[in-house]
Amino acid sequence: MEDIINKLTEIEAAASRIMDDVSEQKKQLALEYDQAVQDFDRAIDEETQKKTAGIREGLETQMKEKLARQESETARTLEEMEKHYEECHTALAAEIYNRILRM
Image 1 (tube, rainbow, N blue to C red):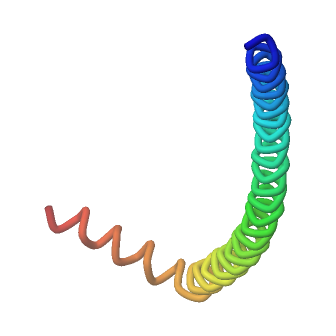
Image 2: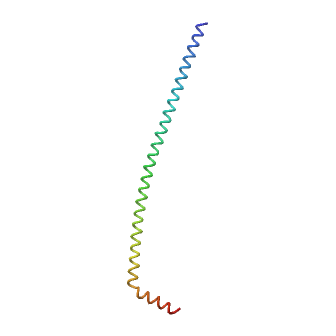
Image 3: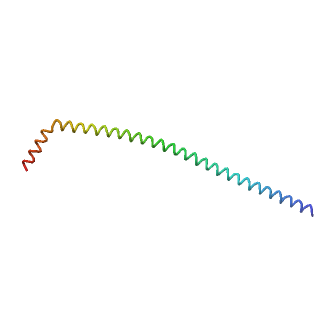
């Protein structure tokens, strides 16, 4: 009978050690999982930042090009208006003068 009790005690101790080992393995796996999640999140954040920076650079380049085109078009339009004024200012002044007199 004592042998059976000793065997049961040994089995219980072994089962307890196994449960402790499983619990420790579970904790270790949870730590590894958390680390893997953090690494994945970090990698995604870095990739997102790189893509965002690339998009931002592209948009800034497009904006600068568009601004340069607009400045060029504005300068051209202003030159055309000044040229038209220089060529026609006497006629324009006379037309305004005549309109005022007809009132």
